[in-house]
Length: 552
Ligand code: NAP
Ligand code: MG
Image 1: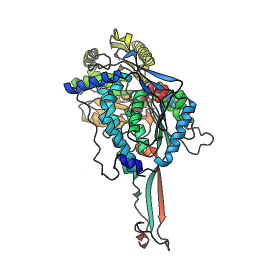
Image 2: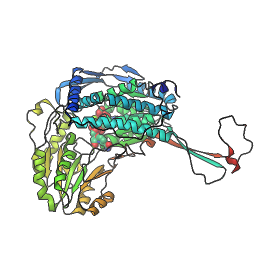
Image 3: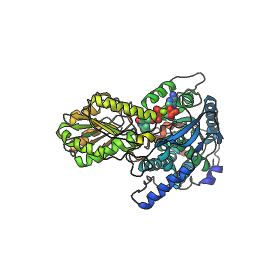
Image 4: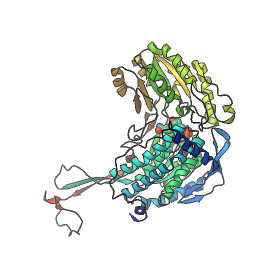
């Protein structure tokens, strides 16, 4: 299929350059800062933004709406999105199902072309996209910019993966007179259910993979961040994506999200979010409902309780900034955030005062401020949860430092960055995901003991070691149970293609996002075997290719 698609980008015929990561903005340059400051201010003039549902290419209004207030300042209404009910959801699924017939037959090169075009438009509008995340999710400048870059990377990466997997592959022939081929086909309708913490990159990654593979999508963004999803949806439409291929379905998880799980027309759920919801999704999708003719596939990326180990040979000067960024960057609201610092007793007492000074130096501010290091958390519930864990920390450990938030707390969802020491490995603070700027410090006897503590939770997402002992670094590669291991650096900030991302145990099931196995999850593999020893072929049409194998 080349028609309307090929008019946009004649890509299937042009060889693609090698995948490269999108470079982040250099905010140390005054001109770059100025541009971004302007983007934040300019976007604000357009508030409140409007984000109706998009079903089959048409905006659809709903009775119920979601008002999005900035976590920086809850008096600021950033915009309003629709909130889908059951009927809207069913219509959306029907639109995606309808679009599947033609999209799944569209040439992989043409599908890739859309994603590359969308990546290009995101590049042109990246400050606007990042500025929206500054307002809507209270992302600090660098974090918002990195989110946009990662989304661009996913579009570029999965476009190339679709091309790679779009080819029919001849398989090694061990038997004369037999031809074997492996090829992939799309699954059907994919429900993309995203979190608010990487409100652009993560759902764009799931959506781009689904679309690149030839599936159609119902995209349900998190309630806290529907506006950035709507802006991306508009960009996809502006790129000429045929209607119905991606549909935008904001609304409440228990309503429209749940309907996607129950629908017998949705073949797959791509989910990133909490363990609680992820396990619920797996259970629901395991239930076969009347009329269902397939086993529903689920990719579920879930939470973490990530540990960073510091051994006695570590360079403490580099440990502190890496811990501060890993634990408190975006206020600890990253699935990869460091929430347990495991320190061997030889250096424990030396490290603590430096850590205290470091945490005390962090600037708590609205994310619109370029100096912000600790931003407001996403909503009232998150704030209450963090404050509850600070109270738990006071009971379970020793308070090393809990900051003062001051007047900021009156305006937005600000919570103090906090650090507790002498936390027992099995304490709640050392076992449960807090998703806020709270760090538990745990003392270990030696490196082996530190590994044992690190592995002693239900999760296995990210982990790290700071050490100058080569055997320890090597041992961590096999013995530290985590999907993404980082040695002598921060433990957050995975980059597409360089650090394919995802965990195991209760941190999720599925192949790593931004890696070579990811796209296959959105495809069915097929193989065909042809006996070439037959006699009496029908006459060949020109262009049918050689048929001489039967002479082998
Ligand atoms: P969440 O509460 O689990 O929500 C995620 C999504 O699931 C939201 O869109 C939510 O909708 C939806 N949902 C809720 N109930 C549902 C239901 N019954 N059926 C279908 N969908 C439903 O997670 P979150 O608070 O947005 O994100 C934070 C969590 O994500 C943390 O645990 C973090 O570790 C994890 N995370 C993991 C990764 C990873 O790669 N492993 C990356 C980022 C985040 P509503 O918004 O309407 O409730
Ligand atoms: Mg939620």
